[in-house]
Length: 152
Image 1 (cartoon, helix red, strand yellow):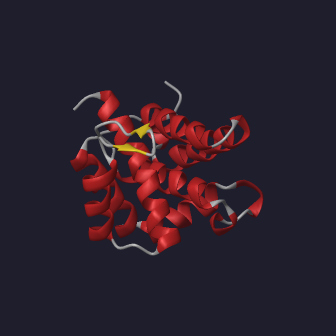
Image 2 (cartoon, rainbow, N blue to C red; image 1 turned 90 degrees about the vertical axis):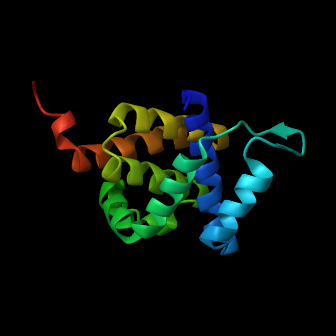
């Protein structure tokens, strides 16, 4: 799959996780909705790019299956004792998806995960929020994959 299709999948992943949280939609409903109506389609004048569907499914399901573990790690990575539940819902979805990839998808390089989710944050927020996503995912990466940061 192409880099563009994986990037498009990450944007869809964040949107799906957000929908599941705020609208209470289930996994199968989200798969059906996104695969039939969002991914690769035009909605209200916005063109949604084709996305790597299996990657989309794997990450969304992985976040749901491991959400308690991911949320604990994110609570530790957030500075100043700011709990994950106080973070805005889209940012929470970005952090959970990035947290899952960092913790459970070792086939994807740390730098790729962080850059991709900072880019996703840039689609929704400004520089301050994108910087916060970058900082939290960097702290999480240092916890999840310390071998990538050791002195060589």
